[in-house]
Amino acid sequence: MIKLDMRALTNAIVKLEAAADALPQIAEQVRQETLGHLIVGSEVNIYRTEPGRYRRTGEYRQGLDARARATRNTATITALNETDYALAVEVGHGGMTIPMLQQLALLRTNPDDPLTLGRSGQNWTVAAPIVTAAQVFALRRMQELFARKVQAALR
Image (cartoon, helix red, strand yellow):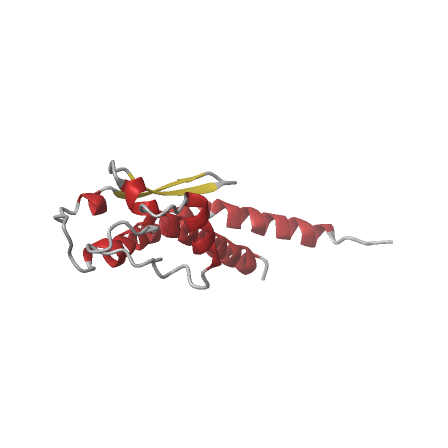
């Protein structure tokens, strides 16, 4: 026969609910960090590379955005770029697809670092998975921060 301590179970549930209540704050923190990841990714893949035939206007960087939406039970971080040519920058012209880039981003051991495949002003047809890498960063960061809240709540 299993005996359950109802008081301990109730206390644990209350603490877990408190961790879930922190989702909006966690989501906002991750949104800000994801926007930073997007900016650094654009610098590494575009703006700090050797110039080429295109004039760099900063339009791509200005199109970067990270959005957060959270309720008590869910949180969503969206990393995106709304410029007309964002998808062409993301996948390049060499046959890369978003699922391929997602796998590359997921396999990395350090998602904090931007993902670069060698794109530059001279090598502008190479994929630059700026948004994809930031999406993976956001996923892992949300998991990490929420897990910390849950662990702290159950101590």
